[in-house]
Length: 326
Ligand code: SAH
Image (cartoon, rainbow, N blue to C red; front, side, top):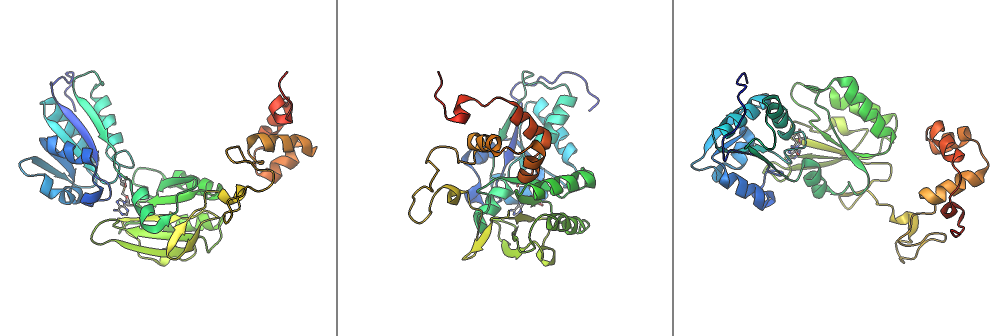
C-alpha cells in the first residue's frame, strides 16, 4: 500500500457480507443480493465453497485463513478500479471477521466515507446466535464472547477476560476454542472457570452449526476438555443458573425472582413493570437502612468499597424514601 494517491473511483464499493452459519436458509436476503451485485468475491476458501453456486460469472479470489490483511488490501484495490467487491465472512463480518481489518487497511490508505468508495456491512447471524439456537436458550441472560485465539492477542489478556467473566457469572461463548496446533487454551479456560463455577456447570459444544457435519454435544465444565472440539466448534458455558432439560440448555431470564411461574402471580413486595425490590432504588434504600458501613456492605454484595461509600454519601432522593416530591 505505497500508493498515496487519494482513492476516488466512482461506483467502487466494498460489501462486508456475513454469511451466517453457512446454510442457504440462513443467508439473509441482503447478503444474497450483495453477492449478486458484486463483480468480485473475496473470501476464505471454505466460505467461497459455501456460496459456490451464487458465484457464476464473477471474479473469485480465494485466500487462506492467515491472509486477512491481503484480502482487505485486494478488496480496496479492486474498489478503486470502480468494481463492486464482496468480502465474505462466516457468521457476522464484524464478529472476529473481516470488518475490522478492512477499516484498518482503508484508514491506513487515507480512505474516508466521503472519498467515493462506499462501504456497506451486511450483518449475519454469528456463531453464538446459531449455536445457541441449536441447543435451546442458553443466552437469555447476560453473556459474552471470548476468542481463545492467541494468534493476535497475548494469553494474559485472554486469561484476564476469562477470569473476569467467570467471576461475574456471565454465560460465555468461546470462539476459536481449539485447533490442531492450539490445544492448551481450552484446558486453561477450564482451569480458570473452575475457580469460580461448579464442575457440573452445563456446557454445550456445537460443531459446524447448520452445515452437513453439524454435531452437538452436551457436557459439563469439568468434562468439556474430553470432548471433540475443533476449529469449527463454539463452546457455550452456562452461568450458575443454567440448566439442561429434555436435551435443551436454558438460562433463566429471572422471572422467578418476581413471579410464581406456575400461577403468574407476583411475589409479595414486587410489582409487574417495575424494578425488583432489590433493583437499584430498592437496593439503595436497603443499604441506607441497614446501618452498616461501606466495608461490610462491599463484602456482602461483592462490590468495590469506594462505590458503596459514594452511594452512602449521597443524600437519599424523595424516590428512595418513598416521599412525594414537594
Ligand atoms: N465471524 C464469525 C466468527 C469467525 S471466528 C461469526 O460471526 O460467527 C471462527 C470461529 O467461529 C470458529 O472457531 C468457531 O468458534 C465459530 N464458528 C463459525 N462458524 C461456526 C459454525 N457454523 N458452527 C460452530 N461454530 C462456528
